[in-house]
Image (cartoon, rainbow over all chains, first blue to last red; front, side):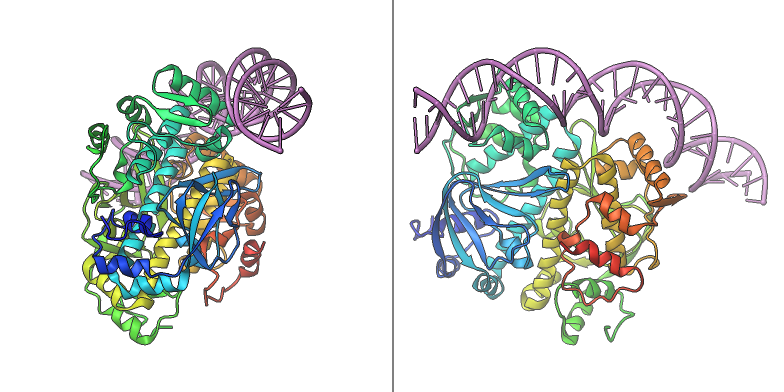
Length: 261
Length: 261
DNA sequence: CGCTCGTTTGATATATTTCAAGAATTGTGG
DNA sequence: CCACAATTCTTGAAATATATCAAACGAGCG
């Protein structure tokens, strides 16, 4: 799509194009942003709660997640990120990080200094609006998570997370088209849906018995998307993917159905 | 603070000034935004989930709240808003509302068409950045709510909400300086903290017995802020009020303490 | 091959929900 | 301003989803 599909920052452009049309000139402006690629191990922190980060991180490969902790020791995972996510725009724009950002797997990131990014956003409203959109959509996802954690039972809650992740993976062109794999520990999954690892385990096994998912190693695969969407109470409108030019490859009709109301 | 303290949109300027310095010219630009004041009854919807709103709503008086519902009928309140909150910027910028927005009490709003607002944001980066900040801070609050609902027990959870509300009230100059009152039904409170009204009731009574709060009619007042902060696991850094010029009136030392780490 | 980390299983505990009904408060119309 | 209706609040007893604790099992890794 871009004349420069091999450019390091291409995943960022691709993501921004979900919500706005970007001209070739716009893309070039993005590609000219200063940046520094870095390889990162699983488990390494990109940002600590309380830091004053100077860079936004564009995820190039691998997965990352945000989390914060309560006084009683409980940890809550707030979001999981994948290729193309301009993670930590919020922390660096706000000045002080209000949560941690950690690699879930090993991977690569491009560090982009916040000041040029901020200037670009206001110099070029198309890009600025797209970046604002990205933070707004993240806000929408947080709202859905409040609902998910607050008002859904364990089975629905876990399924919902799996559906969200699958759909975002597909849009981000990560993983194969016919199934979706999530490299996550059951303990991490528990912290994401605010349950106990033990209970997550039992619930996952139940979902597997019911023929909805398959699990191998640390991977989870959705095998019956349609049924899963129903179990999960999953209505992906909150992901605001409407404007996507994205033409889905295989099992996408079913996915679209989930979006309809 | 402003030369135009009586202007209808002054609460918006005051709020934006929490995070950025706005020049007199900036303020004038905001004041020139087209807007329409409207009086609204308690319970009335400002936006429905799925709407395509054309206006942002500036709350001038009264309280409003956002909420969305799960397939099982459960309702989750996502945030509560007060004077000066530019509510529904997100829905109108994103195009389609992903949640409902409803008045908690009667009050007044100023409807601001989204297009001039958007143009102003990009014409004037100071204002634009301030508005972006506002949406980012809201995002931070949502993250804290995920943690609150996900990982805190009923007593802590309710206390936390009361603390957040109290602090935001004080910053917004709503209510008296020595105590903070929240005009909310126990059922609504239950939907905000993802508990049952019955359990909220028992927990509130316990908090009252313990001398932390007082309740009269539909109002809740925090009487022991210091103790409450501890019970609530409340660390207000997530509200990102650091940059405030705001000089607190009375019981503010205690409030500042809560922010320290 | 042994060790560590993650998963699985079972038994028990508990915070919160559910159900139900009465008391109190708020709102409303006359 | 009162009386009635409708919420909202309060209380109790029983049910349940999920947490807790503990131990065995399995898999990846140096």
